Length: 347
Image (cartoon, rainbow, N blue to C red; front, side, top):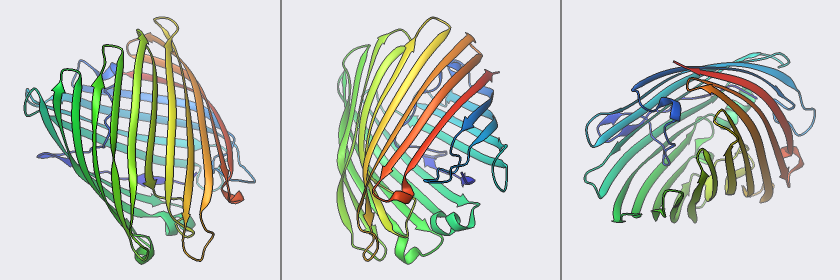
């Protein structure tokens, strides 16, 4: 694993903030107060810290992650949410630098113009900087994604949505071969069938212009559903299809990725929660002319966790994760397991 620094800057409406196309809900422990400070510490064992196809290196990882979050209503119609989370990892068996630092910064502004309609303007800027010189030469890049989404409540349970996004991907090295510019146009709906069931869909297309290669128009899809079958217990499923950046831009221009997932959370008691997730990702790596050609690749990711929540401010979790990549290119195959124990306190 190499050090990856990602700096994300964005603007929503008239605020300087971060944004994502799909927003995650505010964690329960952060609800009810504006400012929240938390600290997470953990230990884990990773069987393949570099994700290598052969010669895997295993290591114990000690990590510490403080986090500061802010969630508040700016006005009766505008809500602002943001957090900053730096992380320090120490690997006892990592060649070279054993201490790795990373950070994440995220924010959201939501504004409702009326009880039935709202508009979100967003801009997400990211910078990827790998400390490994070989990977850095291939993967260091800037990405900017901005767009506008409008929704309208057709019925109390149905909300129609339309969205436009534009993305720029600019590489530090070989920009004439790697840079891309994409325009997305999507429409869909959000449906709340009741207090237990919700569905969401976005369908559309992406027009991608590639430096040094031909342009392409491809479909784009986001589908998801969630069923709350009991208090603190739910099942969620989803599917996405999109073009993505590859981890080998020398031989491949893009990756056509199908992603299917199932998440389950079950409250065993008022203090203990079990969860599990499975992601299945059949993809096609689009080969550059004169290189390796198109390659089929399938990724499977699974994880289980057991969390103990003795108080509102404390969470202790044990987890196990498994990753497998089966690729038409043997050097991209991967098997990795990770088992960990962590504790989080919220102030």
